[in-house]
Amino acid sequence: MSRPHASIPSGISNLSNTILGAGMLGLPYALASSGIAVGGILFFLAATATIFGLHLLALAAQETANRENISSYFIIAKQTFPKAAVLIDLSVIIKCLGVSISYLIVFSKLLPDAMHTVAPEVSWLQVRYLWLGISVAICIPLSLLKTMDSLRFTSYLALASVAYVVVLIVYYFIVEGVTGTRIHLVPRSLEDFFSTLPTFVFAFTCHQNIFAIRNECPDITKVNKVIVSSVLISLTAYTLIGYCGYLTYGNKRIEDNIINNLNKTDTAVVICRLAVSLLVALSYPLQIHPLRISLFNIIELFFPGSRNSNVIYFGATIFVCAITYVVAFFVDDLGIVFSIVGATGSVTICYILPGIFYTKLNANSPWLGKKFFAALLAVLGVLFMINSLIWIILKEVRKAQAPAQ
Image (cartoon, rainbow, N blue to C red; front, side):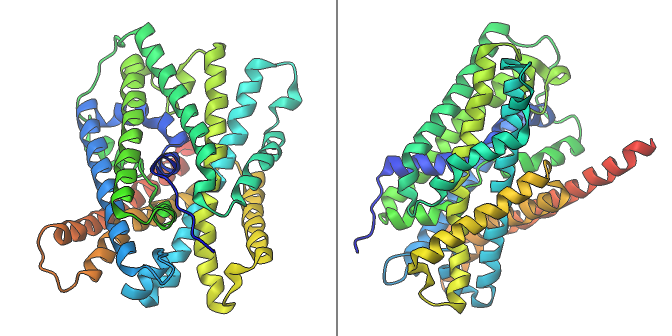
C-alpha cells in the first residue's frame, strides 16, 4: 500500500493548529507581567527554540526512520535510549491526554457563556454537559481519521477562527486606542518574570505532531518549510493578540482571558467565543493522533501487528476518547496534577528530548555548532521544568493559605 504524501500547506495548517489554542487569549495578561520589551524578547526566543527543536527532531527522524521511512519518539528512543523508550511514549500519552481534556473543558465552558448572551432566558442552552455531548459529533469522527493530512481542511477552518480572533482584538485596539494606564517595558519584579515565563515557554508546543507530518511529507526541505512557516504564523497571531490586547486595556484592567475585557453584548464578541470553541474542538483530534501512535507503540510490544487491525485501531481510539470525556464530564478544572504533568511532559517533549536525541545520535561529532546548541536546549529545558514546578507549587500554596488570611 502506498504511503500518503501530504503537501506543505497541509503540514503548515496542522502544525499551526497544534500550536494555536485557547491559551493565546491569556497572552495580553502575560505581557502585563513580563512587560512589552521583555515579553517581545521571550516571544522571539521561544519561537526560535521551537524552530530549532523541531528541526532537531526532523533530523533525528531522517536518521532513524525504519524500512517504511517512518519515525517517532519511540523509534528514535530505541536507537538512543532504549530503556527509556516506553517512558517517553508514556509521557507523550499523558501530555496529549491532559491537553485533549482541557480542550473539552474549554469548549464546554465557552459555549454556555455565549448562550447566556444570545438567549439568557433559555437555561438549558447554558448547561455545560449539553455542549460537552454535542462536541462528540465533532471530535470523535475526526479523531478516527488515520492520517494527519486528513485533518487539513478542519485545520484550515480552525485557523480561520484564529484569524477572526486576531482581527477582533486588533479592531478593539484601533477603536479604543492605547490605554491611559501605565504600560510596563520590563517586569516589575523577578516574581513577575519567573511566574510568567512558562506561558512563553509553552506557547509554541507542537512537537508531538512533527513526526506524523514528517512521515507523510518525508522531504526534509519541505518539513523545514512547514516548521518555519507554522511558527512564524503563530508568532504573528500571538504578537497581534498579546500587544494589541495589552496596549488597549493596560495593567489595571487586563483580564487573564482577553475576551472578558471585550463588550459581552457585542455580536462580534459572541461570535469570537464561538470561534474559539470551534478552534479547540477542531484541535482535539490533533492531540488524539500522536497519543494513539504512542499508545500503539506500547501495545505492539505485547501484541505485534495490532497496529494493522482496524478493530483494535477504532477500539483503542474510542477508548482513549472515552477517557477524556469521562474526565471532562466530572471535573471542570484539571488542577495541580495535570499542571505538573503538563510542565514536565511538555518540557520533556519540546526541549529536553530534541536536544538529547540529536546529541546522542551525533556522539562522535565535535562539540561545535548544532550539537552544542542541542545540548544547551536540553539543559534549558531542565531549568524551565524546575521553574514551572516551583511556580505551580507556590500557586497552590498561596491558594491554600488564601482563606485563612
